[in-house]
Image: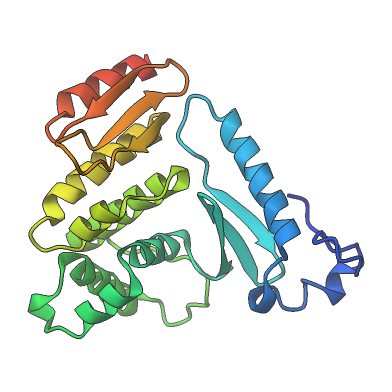
Length: 244
């Protein structure tokens, strides 16, 4: 997307100059529906062109201080100073739900869900190792701990899946459960691997009988499969066929 000049017409279609329209307060108002629809059309067209790879990560300029990050059928307006790692973690928090996260925070540290413990580990790491002269948005490097790696991998898996389709409510409930977390984490990891390899995912949410978690179909080869809990060998087979 080309940079918009201050005196050029605002792309929202208002007829005003950009400096007198959405350049003023992009965070407060956000682009109007017409502009958002155009963004989404452009995004969907780009996704359709991606035949043999996972979904693209879309970032759109919105004024001098904010960017728009596209996830499925929504645009999230984020400050430019937010790093991509921070955005991924925020996506994970939005996914499990604000109410759930706040309830977990009120618990004693040893009783919190492991996702929240990982988030606290990330916060502690960044606070401890942030350089004294650090400026907002400036990238710095820190040694990766086990907890932070687990957090970032889960957050990226959730993000990749939501680029192509909203996650089922039942799966999210299991992700936030102490007892069902491991099974839900496994399903998310496998599904995200399929997506990165160019497969389309269709979640199955029937309640009447036992069934697979999702259908996967490769956009290029047409190869398809249904995932069950212990389908690691199927995953490896499909990935080999799709990438060779």
